[in-house]
Image 1 (cartoon, rainbow, N blue to C red):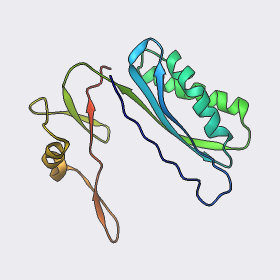
Image 2: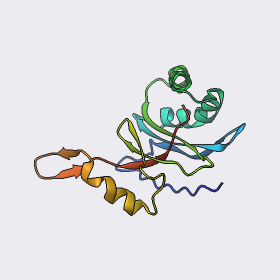
Image 3: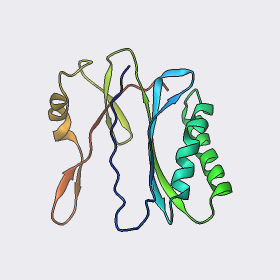
Amino acid sequence: WHLKIGTAMMRGRRRYFEDACVVTAAVPGQPNVRIQAVFDGHGGPESAQALAVNLQDVLTAATPFTQHSLEQACEELERRLKNSVARSGSTAVIVIVEHLDHKEEVIVQGREIVPSMDGHFDTIQELNSRFTESAPREKSRDWQQRAPLQTSRRQRW
């Protein structure tokens, strides 16, 4: 299967770049799985870079992916980080993409997974128009925004 990925990063006002990303990493023995991640460094680039370097090995050891194995993998990343970097930190957004051979689509809103009514949608616009009105709203003084709506393939675990 083919996965198109792009990335753009900006240094900001600092003289050095603190962030790191993993654009696409394969998982040995899992030909339909790819890992993507963004690490937002704080106080220097060392933590973000260390997490990016260790991510593939740690997640490969966590297969098969379950909630417990992924929690353990994140704890292992944190242990490695504490042992290698003293003064910087990082937040992480890690995405595991798995290509499934069937067309069963679902709606993901927050932590809830809602199966589609007819099993497929012709376009993402059709999907969004179908569920936009039911999405919860986030409000502030001057604006309101609908909560993000994402499509996903059904998880096997």
